[in-house]
Every structure is written in structure tokens, then in C-alpha cells.
Image (cartoon, rainbow, N blue to C red):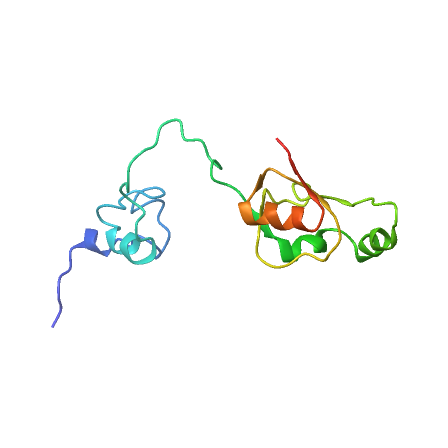
Length: 141
């Protein structure tokens, strides 16, 4: 039994004999005759989500933090030992902003050695613990 099939329905939209552009050029038909492909392999390609925010300032809340127990890892061990032996009362300066951190938090303990810490922000407990060991907190803009 021979079945007559409409010739236009045999046009292959994605492959076949590569007859120019039978399914349209590029992403044509993504909402129509190529919908199955877009829904299956590119979900969420069409449409909008959420609300627009005009004049958005990015990185407003960007504030990487470092705890007190990791503070001495920002300088070399040799530096710490040199200042520990020092009897003149000199203290090393640890600039956490240069290391990529903005805020110093108060988790952990500091060794009984004075240190000058430069940061954009300090938590209350961090400031107390730094001053407790004889150090100082310096705010940097």
C-alpha cells in the first residue's frame, strides 16, 4: 500500500540534505515550528523574569571578611617571629585591605603580641580583642 505524503511536510528543519534555510535562519521559529527544540534544550530562553532595577549600583554590599584567628596568616611567619623578639615595643602592621578583605571579625584568639590592623570595618569584639593584646585598629577609607 502506497501512502501519499505532502512534500512540504518532508522539509527537515535541522538537518537533512542542507537545502539552504528550510526552517528559517538562525533562531527563527523558536516560539513556533522549532518550539520543541527550544523547550527541551534551552528552557527559559524566551520571556522575562523579575523586576528591573534602574540605576543599580553593584557591589554595594561587597564586604569580604577575615577572622582574628586567620589574621596572622596574612603576614609571613618570619615577620611574626621578628616582632615577637623585638623589645622596643614595635608592632607589625597588617593591612587586610591589601589582602582583599574589608572587615575584621572577632572569632578566635590573638597571640599576646601587639599588632596594628588596617581595615575598612571592625566588629566590636574584634576591636576589643585587638586592643586587649596591646594593638590598635586603624580605619582605612
